[in-house]
Every structure is written in C-alpha cells, then in structure tokens.
Length: 227
Ligand SMILES: [Ca+2]
Figure: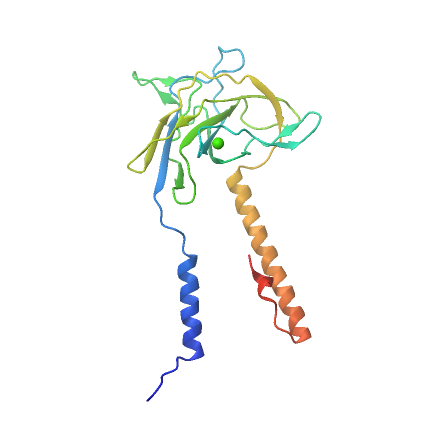
C-alpha cells in the first residue's frame, strides 16, 4: 500500500499558517465613545470655568471605583504621573476643554465643558470597561516642578448602545487638589515608543545570539527569540 508522506516544506508551510492564524487579533466589538460634560468644570474658586485647552483625561474601569493615579517620585514634593492608573482602571484618551465645547439647547457653547466626538474607541474583547470617569487639570500642559490644580468626576456606569457609549459626565466639578506632575508624552505615544524599543532590543538580542551560536556551531535555545 502506498503511503504519501508530506514533504518537510509542506509541513513548514502548514506550521506558518497555524502561527499566522493564532497571531491574528481577536475580533470583538469596537466601542466608540462620545463623552462630554453638560455643565462647566471650574477652577478651585468654584466660579471660573476651566480655560479653553485645559487637559481632561478619560478613564475606564471594570468596577465602579476610581483607583487613582500613582506616584512617580516620592519627592518632596511627591511627583505624580498624570496619565497613570491603578487596579483595573485604564487610560482611554485625552481631550481638551472647548475643543470643542458642549453646546446647550440654544446652540450656545458652554464655557468650561468639552465633547469627545467618538475619537476614543476600544475593543470590548481586549479590555473590560463598565464604568467611566474623568481627571481634569487647570492647565494646558504640565510645567516641570510647578503645582497644578486638578480634580476628578464621580464614576458613571457606561451603557453600550449599538457599539456607542454616549456619556454625559455632568460637570459642576472643582479642580480643588494641587500637586506636581511629571511632564511626559501622552500614553499612546509612549506605548508605541516602548513597543518599537522592545522590538528593536529583541531583534538585536536574537541577532547577537544567532551570531554567537553560529560561531560555536550550536543550535540557539528556543527561548532566545521569544517576545
Ligand atoms: Ca476601578
């Protein structure tokens, strides 16, 4: 009886296909966020709306707790990473006061407000987001060593409706905390830089390992190129 044995080449091709399929990103629902405050966010005096361009960060959480930010340096004074999260919270993105404003029923811009307009999205198979909150700052940037007024909203339950979360985070909050923050690029940029840096470092390590083992006439260990 004839026995057809697949060639090594076909075996390799099949293995590559299997790896390729498992490497494909999971296909969940992409959720878009429209987030806004319909009332102003105020400076510490409770009267002055935050100026146009002031920073507002939007965060998600699996549970209904804002787990706060983390300290970057103990100081004194302690310096905080403004984008940082703890626990099950996740940074979703940054928007700015008045870019654009929330418009009232008479179509007038409400000072001290913002509207995000679906620029923030996430994959619901990659992250679990059931709640939303914001962290806002009375500044358009983080000057090194200079204290900045800031505050947070209450935590809101996020309801997905046909792939969109349309969330009024209400407003009427005060930037009534004061701390010093580190000045860093937005996390998306940092993430890409770290990813690129990690890939480059990994490739360099693999190449070095490969050269070394070639010289020694040995097979490289499997874990050498694992990411
Ligand atoms: Ca949380």
